[in-house]
Length: 175
Image (cartoon, rainbow, N blue to C red; front, side, top):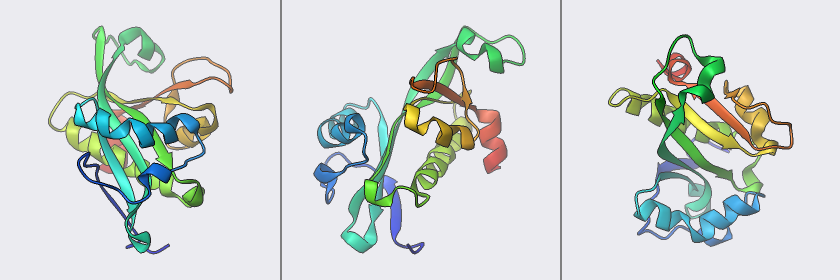
């Protein structure tokens, strides 16, 4: 893999992406979302999506993530709080992240997360954002923990994990 092999760009719902309908990240829900719901979600402004294209394979749809606005309740962040919080906490939610099976284990997930964190960081300079929230698939929990996310719930290792990364930490990573 060379540095110029991949490019991340904003997903355009009016465009056709090579191999999008064949995208398979190993998670049935995420792969099906790419095939049948991604264009509609972005078209209706429910989220924004960013796609990784493999320039060595005709700009093949190789990975993606989606971001949307979200709010958490203050009690969901009690264990992270350094004081009182307003009832509603503004944040960004990473709704979906998928990397094609052929590219997993090659740092693409970290590349996509780095891009997402940069976008959240930039947006926080313009609007109030307390952090980045996501619901992690049990198989991905350790990946997010390795990036600095904190688990907000006390679920088991087989449960979807509610996870959060504060804007303070994101800014430290990127400033």
